[in-house]
Amino acid sequence: MDEKQQLIGSLPTTNGSSEQRAHAKKSSRWGTVKLIAACAALVALLHWTFVVPKLPMKHGKHGKHHHQKSQCPQVEPLVPSQQTDELVNMDAYLKSPAFQNSSIQRLSGAVQIDTQSFDDLGKVGDDKRWEVFYPFHEYLEKTFPLVYEHLKVEKVNTHGLVYTWQGSDAKLKPTLLMAHQDTVPVPDATVDAWTHPPWSGFFDGKEIWGRGSSDCKNQLIAILESVELLLDAGFVPTRTVLLSFGFDEEISGGQGAGTLAPFILERYGPDSLAVIVDEGAGISDEWGVTMATPGVAEKGYTDVVITIRMPGGHSSIPPDHTAIGVMSELITLIEADKYPLRLDGKNPYLGQLYCGAEHATEFPKKLGKLLDKAQGQCKAKPDSLAAEAAKAGPAIQYLMQTSIAVDVIGGGVKVNALPERVQAIVNHRINVGEHPADAHAKIAGLAKEVAKKYGLALHSFDNTTESPSSISLSAFEHVLEPAPVTPTSVDGETAYSVLSGSIRALYGSEVIVAPGIMTGNTDTKYYWDLSRNIFRFAPGYDGESSGLGNIHTVDERVSIKNHVNTVKWFSLFIRNMDEADFE
Image 1 (cartoon, helix red, strand yellow):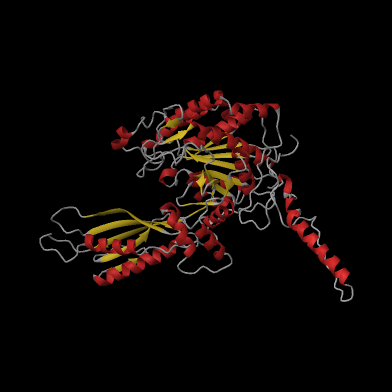
Image 2 (cartoon, one colour):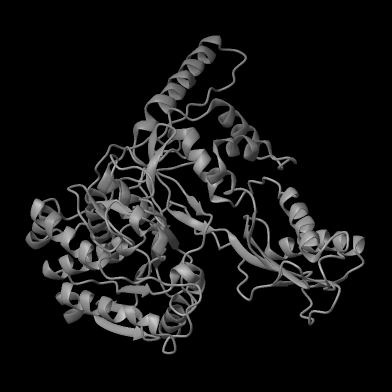
């Protein structure tokens, strides 16, 4: 095919260049002229209303058609124009049982290699537990021979992997695809609870079971499978393709992505990548429509450490409140003082609501009315739109609210000794439009009340040494503002339009693409300086297999249909980005 095909008909527009307007001329003398002019105006109005909207409005070579006033414009399915016999055969092979069987073996083999990461891991080179990645690297090299023959493979901080598939046009910004090699641990006490052993990679005829099967060795293997297939088909990229695989994402990524991103930044410079795609949100059924919600932002992050020091002594002569009791009171205040629900205008979930209102048949009427009222108005407090949307449950609520979770606590050493030092850690995920400093100030205010009540000194984020009879507040070094929001315009050719078009090309035009936001953080937090176009997206979808595949828990698994679709999508996206008409 010489041009990218349009797979669906044009959507209507209200401002086509061919519209005709008739203007009635005023005349006090000739009533007939007035009548004719009025009729002409009516004809023109009918023409403008019912004819012109059926004419296509094209933007760039992708021919995107959408209603000018749409709050959720959808692009047409996008297929590459380059269709050699080899690429056509590759696409056919991707649909075959032969490919499915070979793909099962590749993913199953990856799952069988234990690559757990632990919170207490030391530095690479010092801690022997990092050495689990050596056999995993050997497996990748054996499984993807063309990748290792044709791409430049570099190791960063021993276990980080960077693959470079050099394009023919060095002026074009590269495409970067990401995944992580590590998995969360499998506690020994839970092994017997698995239907199939966690390192078995067992295939039951529909799903592949095991730790990492859906988070996220499936995405890593799918990326490599797509590149291997494209190499086998003789595809030569114009735009450079980079692959970056960290190895400690599950423990915040400091030694993996935290070293990979600076490595790439030093080589290419700031804002040097056209697009970045990492693991993230996927495709699901929402409000009666199938919706893809690639994450275009992430919430911020901060952990606050609270340390209370009080005099010790024998438990037979206690004060009214021990240090543990005082800490309990402060924690109770913290948990009771929830952050307000607030749907900031920059929050991508607002865009998702607009998409639901415009395209979903089962979108709640009350939510739709509140959404209409919210347009062009200042947000009142409380935010009634956010409150109504949050009724869908905590997973939606915390897209619009800073979360607080007291996750770690410790204190006391003996049952008959008063605790002299008690410590708790409070995790915060910061809402769009708010800042970690807001969380620090709020918790400091509550601590001040408790400190005054019990005659304790307060050291509030001032880096001072703990002192007797005091409350000390500090934050972990890793404090993260909410992520910059990736642009989601589809006017002209954009990274978002290519991503959206690739989704709709694979799954059909009935799939609605809407912006999403992540409540958690991915390795992309280290890559902000490299691109304005960062997407956290899991492109695999199987309508018969719902949920998140039991990630981080017993019986993690992924359907082979989901995985094969992931391979299809990456092979399509790489080619579409290669033909994209922007830097």
